[in-house]
Image (cartoon, rainbow, N blue to C red; front, side):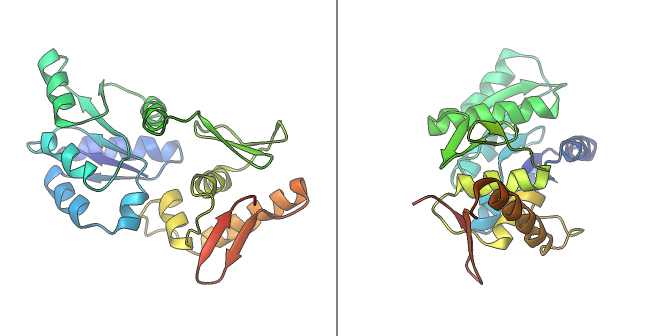
Amino acid sequence: MIVVVDERELVKDGYTSLFGREGIPSQGFDPKEFGEWVSTAADSDIAAVEAFLIGQGERTLELPRAIRDRSMAPVIAVSDQPSLEATLAFFDSGVDDVVRKPIHPREILARAAAIRRRLKAISNFTDIGSIRVFSDGRDPEIDGDVFALPRRERRILEYLVSNRGRRVSKTQIFNAIYGIFDEEVEENVVESHISKLRKKLRKKLGFDPVDSKRFLGYCIDWS
C-alpha cells in the first residue's frame, strides 16, 4: 500500500485514483491526521505500507522523522516548487528522494523499489528454490521460464517470498494486497487467491511450497 500525505483533497484523490489504476492500494491523509496515525497505528498496519508519498502541508517536513520511528519504507517527497532550497529542505527532513510534478505513478513505484534495493543492498529479485520473484512488477520465473500470474496472485507470492521463513496471517496478506482501509472487499477473498496460486504452483512444481496452518497463517520456504 502507498500512503499519500497532502493537505489538498484534490491531490490526495488524484494520486489514490492513479495508483488504483495500477492495481496498487493507497490511502490519502492530511498531514495532521497522518502524524497521529503513524504514531498510533498497529505494527501490522505500518508493515503493510510499501512507500510514503509526502506532498504539501504545514507539518510535512516533520513527518519523515516520525515515519522512521515506525518504518523503513521509502519516503518520497513531491515538490511543487522547482527550487534548490525546497529540495534541500526535503532532504534535510529525512526523505529518501524528491520528485517534481507531474510524475507518473509507475515512476514513483520504480523509485520506491530502487530505494528498497539500496536500503537492503539486494538485487531486484529473490530466488527461493527454483522460483525467482522480482520486485519490479514482472511475473516470476520457475526454472527460468516465465510463470504468468494474475496481479493479485503475483503480489501474494511476492509478499510470501519477501517474508520467507516467517508465517504471515491472512489479515497481513490482505493488508499488503488490498490496503488496510479497503472496506469494499471481504478479507476472505485472500483465501480464494491463495488457493488458486497454490494449485498453479503445485501443477508447475509437482508439490505445494506454501505451508498453511489454521489460525497461524501461511509460510513459503525451501528447507
